[in-house]
Each structure stands twice: as C-alpha cells, then as structure tokens.
Length: 172
Image 1 (cartoon, rainbow, N blue to C red):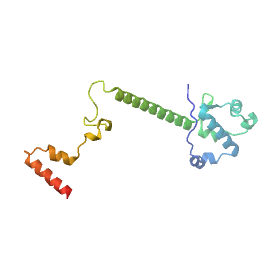
Image 2 (tube, rainbow, N blue to C red):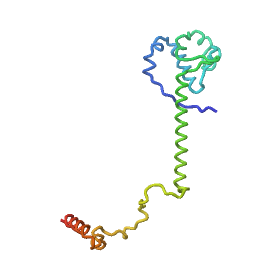
Image 3 (tube, one colour):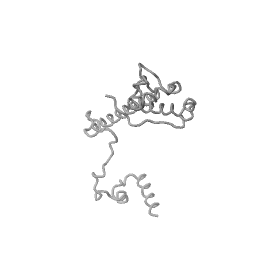
Image 4 (spheres, helix red, strand yellow):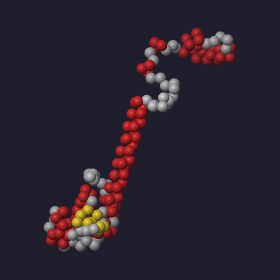
C-alpha cells in the first residue's frame, strides 16, 4: 500500500519564471495546477478528456475547450495516464529519506538495547575510569591539602619538594 504524503515543496518563483507557464492562458493555468495537484496524492490523471473532467470535477465541455500543448510541457503521458516527472522525483526522494530515517531509528534502538543489556562479549565499552555521581558520597572526599599532608611518601624528596612548593605558592 502506497502512503499518501500530505505536502510537497513548490517553488512559486521558479514556476512563475518559467516561460511555458507564463505563455499559458488563464484556463490553461487552471487546468495545469489542477492536474499538478491531483498528481501528488493520486500519481496520475486520466489522459482521456472525459475521464479527466470527471476526476478533476469539471465539466467535459470546459476541459475540451482547453489546449493541452503548453500544459503537457510539465507532464508525461504513460499508458493513457498523465503524470508529473517532477512530482514523482519529489515523492521518491521523500520516501528514500523516510526509509533512511527509519533505518537510523532502528539502528539507534538496537544500540540503545545493546547498551542497556550490556556487552554480550564481556568487554566493557568506554573509559574504565568513569564514576557515576551516585557512586560517590561527599563525606568520602578528602580535601586536596589533607591528601598532600598525610599521604605523601616522605622518602620521595623530589615529589615532596614540588608539592610543598605548590602548596606554598597556592596559599600565598
């Protein structure tokens, strides 16, 4: 089942600037836009004037008076149906974009599920030093200065002298 896409992009400036559009009469422009709009949701319009009139909701005599030469510049006739190559290309482009987005969504869901279930191979992904804030209690954290005063190995003169120089400069 083909899905109906409710909109399409239409650049009025490009249409109005087109010499073929400008050379059409008011009646031809009216039929052109009616066919154009009908081709979006229904892909085509019957080429037979009687059937076309019925589909578009016009009188058969109104349609028969309008020349199709200028109008057909914008359309193609295939097996008794008038189609718009431009709208067909837009529809295909839209459907391809929709397909790619659906694939991306499925891939994202797969990755999310894999992440939630954990790595099946037993190899953790990401950094091994990550700590969640919920895992640390603030009372467990010592101030940096108390760490330097109580934990530094006094035998390491080089580190000790650098640390003391840093402390002196920072308190300064």
